[in-house]
Amino acid sequence: MTAAGHPPVRPPRLTRGDVVAIASPSWGGPAAFPHVLDQGIEVLRGLGLEVRELPSARTPDERLRLDPRFRADDINAAFADRSIRAVFASIGGDDSIRLLPYLDEPTIAANPTILMGYSDTTTLLCAVRRLGIVTFHGPSVMAGISQADALPPAYAEHLRTMLFEPAAEHAYPEYGGFVEGYPSWADASLVGQVDAWHDDAGPQVIQGSGRVAGELLGGCIEVVDWLRGTPWWPAPEELDGRLLLLEPSEEKPTPLQVERIVRSMGVVGTFDRVAGVLLGRERELDAAEKAAFRAAIRDTIAGEFGRPDLPILANLPFGHTDPQWVLPIGVRAELDADARTLRLVEPWLA
Image 1 (cartoon, rainbow, N blue to C red):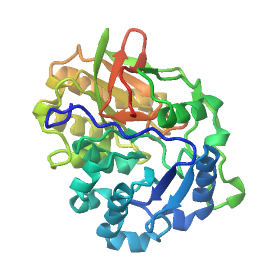
Image 2 (image 1 turned 60 degrees about the vertical axis):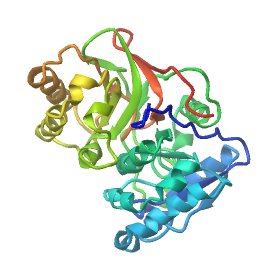
Image 3 (image 1 turned 45 degrees about the vertical axis):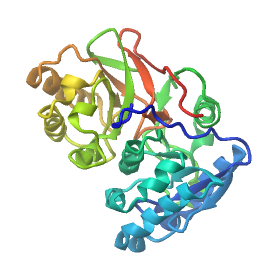
């Protein structure tokens, strides 16, 4: 349910021939590495989509940094344009929170449109969700879509399902492995390729047991920390029954930093209210570092806030990892700690 108590508004599903738009709401990566964006566009065209680049898409970073209203205008215009069925972030960054005061909220709320990205785009996903619309925590055009052809076929199937084929429920796949980045984008001959494949042990239970269900909420843990206390993050009393998504960025926050973020969440009652926590796979950490990251979260929630029963599932393929899941923010899912699975339990698109 939304803050106003209404059911989530699901954007229409995509069909072949639909127009989708690309915006750069934060870092101007496409201007620096245009061939990476071009490859992502080809992947989208391979899905049968018509791609439209918004004015911000290839604008250099120095120009984007100067004017958050310019970037916000692209988001507003895309939602206002009824021919555009989805908006994809070109890449993440670190300052898209500056766009939020300039969003045309009545226009966005009146025009449900797929919005997808991750990392810094967490700001926009949460802001648009606050307006009632389901948003999609998933790959960006340059990081995740551009590399789709180098990843297992199950990933392309998952993308197609999440964008084109909503159902009454959806069991999330296990990919069997993962990559932690891409060859240098400065070398255009390596476009679309990925770094070494690593075997994956699958989802890991940090604590808790049984099944819990709730509406998905969250994203990059550092960006969630920036949002808390703003109008674009739910008030504590609106967190009841949610499944909280948290995943660290490539900046690799330390266990101490993570402990402080989680503690700040806890003191306003977050862990008295949410039904469970889902942790995205940590990037470029060894086994000991991953264990320390997860322990910081578990020990803070269980030890400082008295919730050793709260189910926490870690090592999930979302966020700064490939191949990743597409998680609809605002849709109910079921976390089964005993089976170590996640599934959607209602449609995510109309």
